[in-house]
Amino acid sequence: MKLLPVLLMPILILLVQCENEVDSEMEPLTLAFEVAHVTNEGGSDGAIDLTVSGGEQPYQFSWSNGEVTEDIENLIVGVYTVLVQSHDGQSLVDSAEVKQDPDSGTVTDYEGYSYRTIKIGDQWWMAENLKTTHTADGSDLTGVFVYNNSSSYADEYGRLYTWEAALSACPGGWHLPSDEEWGILENYLGSDAGTKLKVGGSTGFNAKMAGYRDEAGGFDLLGVWTMFWSSTYYTNDHAYVRNLFADQTGIVRSGVHVNDAVSVRYIKDD
Image 1 (cartoon, rainbow, N blue to C red):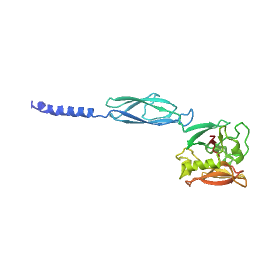
Image 2: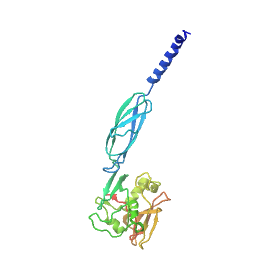
Image 3: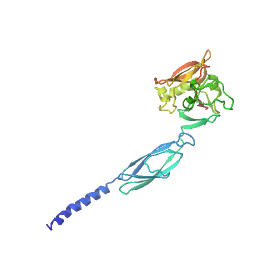
Image 4: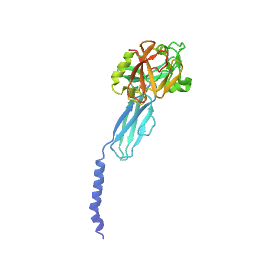
């Protein structure tokens, strides 16, 4: 019986050696960052998605802005530093920078409405429907309506404008896109251009089915159809528009009477 501890010694030594080998083979910590940059000037919609490899879980996180989660969001422009500690005693410090997205920004109209803007190809577009009831110099606009004459629709869908009103309301440095400029956008997007421009599409244009108002004063097709003016005159008191439909993937070019009221997106001057 007294020999038993002696017989066990090689086994214990082997177990210790195996444990040391496992520890020595533990991969070192590495950090990888995926950064979503701020889309609006002065905004706080940045985010950092952190991926940790190596070490032994669980990990502990300590960010320079006080957060203790792996991923952080609602960030302004700036540099964010994180200390990551693994269960096996490793630690690593690294940083990621949230910037202003170079392909997005904002434009503000006379009334103070601020609209997201995005770059698609070589063009800059408003990414929200126009809401103003004034010209850029503060004059009152005529030919401006809200769907069903209910102000509750304005925030989500913007307002509806006759062609003359749409031509008159442009903020400085922006203009109503021509038929040719709409064509450039379509050619750049290629197939399924309508899907790419709608809410959830790949461009961020976020076109909503805002319906329209006909020249007789009737409203229709909210949630089903939307139209955007061009600056190009068609014929017989009509101007070119681009049509998007909830159940279609493309864009339809047509002419609409200038006294109908439809949605407006402006394009930035060259």
